[in-house]
Image 1 (cartoon, rainbow, N blue to C red):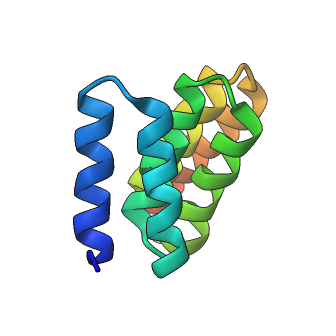
Image 2: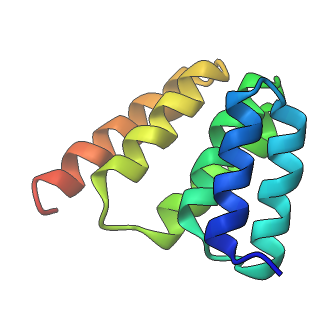
Length: 105
């Protein structure tokens, strides 16, 4: 059986070949094996947003923030996902939080 890291790499390869749905399915397999795999949640946030599945996308971006609360990039990604999903107030809030975390607060 493939490791979560190997499955993640397979998902990225599927995405690179234009199969976003296949990539999402493979990433869901990763989360079955390792629910806290932050790279997988991050990738799902992006891929699902591209597929127009905004609520699911936001859920995965929020999970990254939950798993990495002291990482400014996780808040930056959440901000971008919110923005691309048309939720500007939430995007601005996440961007401010990214700045706050980056400054040590």
